Length: 323
Image 1 (tube, rainbow, N blue to C red):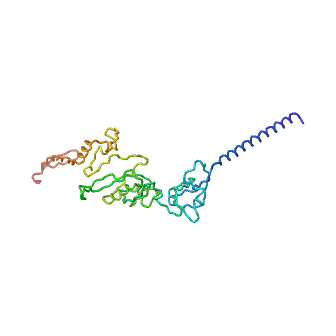
Image 2: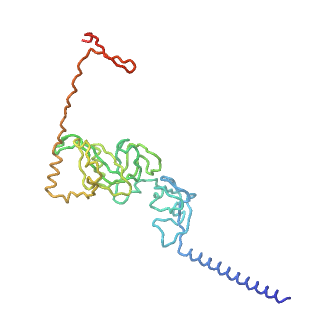
C-alpha cells in the first residue's frame, strides 16, 4: 500500500474519532440539561380548551404540564382525582384560556354551581338595583366595569315632609359591576338593555343603595377603566343649576385658562369658606331680565301696482279700490 493511502486512512480515522467524541459529548450534555430541568417540577392541571363562565369542568378539558416547584401559584391541582372527585362536579367562575392553570379561586366548590358569591372579595357584598335603558347607560355597562351611582330625589326635612324640587346627588363612586341582569361574564358583544344590575359594595354602601331606591331613582355614570377620578367635593345639583355654565362644564380641578388645581376637601375649608359656600348655594338664582324689542313700524298702505315687463318696471295708480 502506498504511503499516501496510509496517511489518508489515518487522517480519516482520526477525524471520525473526533466526530464521535463531539457527538457523544453533545448528547450527554443535553441529557444532563434535560435531567436538571425536570428536577423540582410538579405536574399541574391546566385548561386544554378555552373555558367560559359557567362551563362545567370535565376530564377532557384538562391536561397536565410541568411547573417549577418554586413558582407554583396558590390553589393548584396536581391530579384529576383532586380536581374532580368521584361523583362531584366543578363549574368555571371566570373565563379561562388554554394552558392557563386551573386554580381553586377560579372554580366552584365540589358539587356546586357557578356562584357570584365566590367571586366577592373579603368584606364585600353583592347588591342588586333596578335600572332601565336610560339609567343603565343604554346597555353599554358590562360586568367588571366601574360606575358612579347617582340618585335623583326630593329632599325630605327632619319632619319627614318633602322640601323643594328634585335634586341629584352622587351616591357612590368607583363601584364595580358584577353582573348586568343574568350576565356575569360580559362576553356578549354589543349593548344589552337589562332591568337590574348587581354591584360590588361594602355593607354600608349596600344600605345606601336600598334606601336610595326607596327615596328616588338611581342612575349609572360609566367611568374610564383603570383611572382614579373620584370627586373629593361633591355638590348637589338642583333645578336652579339646569342652565349652561362655562365653569361647571370644565373637567374637575380645571380652571378657566387650563390651570389644574386640586380641589380642597371639606376638612381643608375654613369656617368662613363653608359659610360663604352655604350662603351662595342657598341664594336663589336671579332670573335674566326680559328684553322687549321694539316692533318694526307698519308699512303704509298703497294703491300703487308695480308691473315689470322684461327689465322695465312701471308703477300704476289703481284708484281707491284698495281702501
